[in-house]
Length: 120
Image 1 (cartoon, rainbow, N blue to C red):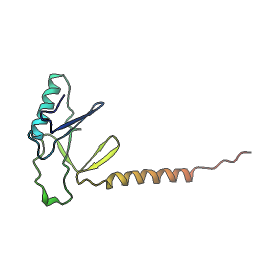
Image 2: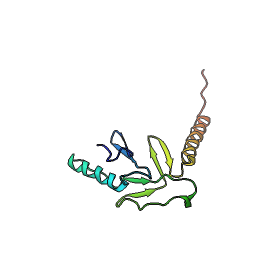
Image 3: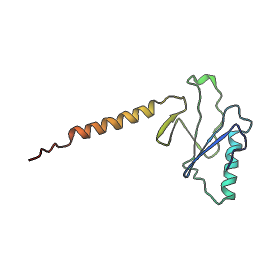
Image 4: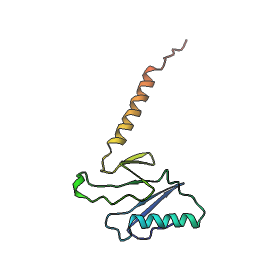
C-alpha cells in the first residue's frame, strides 16, 4: 500500500494504518482514502469503518483555516490516540498530559495506601 501522492504519507504499524494529507496536497484526502479502500478490497481486507476516524490538525486560531467536509462514513474527532500518545487537532497536548498525571496520581495513591509489613 502506497499513497497516490508523494506529499501524502501512510504510517503502518501492526494492524493500524494512519494517513497524513497536508492541506496543500495535490491528491485529496478523499481520493487517498478511496485508494486505500480499493487496495483493501483487492487484497481481501476489511476496513473497520467504526474505528476509522478523521483528525484535522489546524492552527489554534479557528478562523484562519477552512475545514473541508469529512470523509463520508468516518467520524471527525478532536483527539486521537496513536501508540500511547494522545494527539489534539490544535497541536496541544493537554489531554495527553492530563491522562499521564491522572495515572501517576493513582499509582502514588496505591503505593501510599498499601499495607506495610515489618519483618519479624
